[in-house]
Length: 331
Image (cartoon, rainbow, N blue to C red; front, side, top):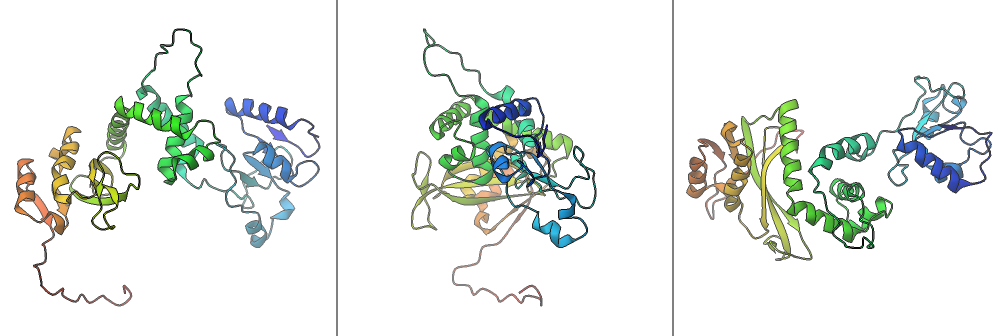
């Protein structure tokens, strides 16, 4: 749907409702000749259009002009990023060198990606039966709204409160965390991970000729069950993640424990997690850093029929570190 510069708008709430109904059926909203007539910036803020059309004279012929009309981030709630084009005439958008388009900042938050991911996840979400005898309690928030907040938190790394605000305050962060716990208990996330890895292996293919395992430390200021004191951060509470990846870095096995846990102790459960997906037998060579250099590690690998292991050697206590000459241009 295109709003021209000649149509006067008296009722913005009604216009927003009409635009929302059109978006629900897959339509996009465009504003023609932005800056002329009623097509002002206030109208852009009110309806958050997917397409903004500018007069071609503003950007044609000169690259420096086109740069002036290349916006940064323009988002409102869950709408797609705004696209700026220069139409040749009203009602059409020819593909010319004068067209300026802004790609999404994060591909995972693009609606066309988000909707496809949700289609795969929705059948795995547990169905809750309403057991209230009178059915007079507050209506349960939709799984889609909770999924959206979880996705924003995972992609951006922000807090639950910020993720709630970024999604338009449609559902509280407390409700989202409760829904997350329900899905964890039902095994939803495990099923999602297994399906994602299987789909990647089928479409692109996992390369398990060379794999690596390593651990990483993550903070957990509020503590909680399973956390431990971080020996590298003044004994503050945190987690340790141990992840097994294929040749190009795709995770195929993982486990978590307290931050005080040694990497070599987490090697066995990490490999067992990959074995549960039937991927352990395809591993040819495993690469480990010097934190795994021990006979215990070699026995654990032998028990799982992994014979080719490249493990960095530990330096002896008190041994001088040899000076490594860096080639010119790499310093």
